[in-house]
Image (cartoon, rainbow, N blue to C red; front, side):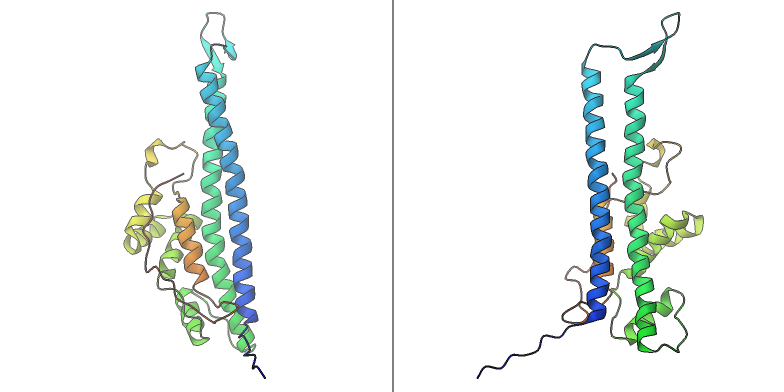
Length: 222
């Protein structure tokens, strides 16, 4: 007679990972849609610049008032900034998912206890519950705070904690549209954030785990 060993299953781990997967799907879907629109506008601009037909308006003296390439360039800037805004938003959302999850785990363990408050309390409570945070979650916190506030305090904290991320966030700042946010995030950075948050909580099978990669220092922009 064969013996079937039970496979450990964590409902909290399933919920935590499934919700994070939903955020990742939303981020990927939004980024893919914007990237497709951005590529189409860039192709449209290249085709117009390669053509000979003028689309626009001139005044009585023949000076250009506006032209189609200007319209397309503005559209491209808007889409590029929207793409960055998606990434910034999901850095915040991923970190917030961990925050609210720790509070939920604490309430599940002891409904009468006071909710943990700031980041250090959340880290300590998660460790007490058996779900130690990834060592780099403190860096994700600094990045999320930067994208939420973009204050001088948030910038200084990020620069001290993660110099590479700070440099990437403000790379080529002078070349960006005047209305754009001061902070940017690269695709590699968003991947790193989701990875760190994923390994800062339980899994459906196997409890908590550690990431194979110790650190990542992404750079770049849109």
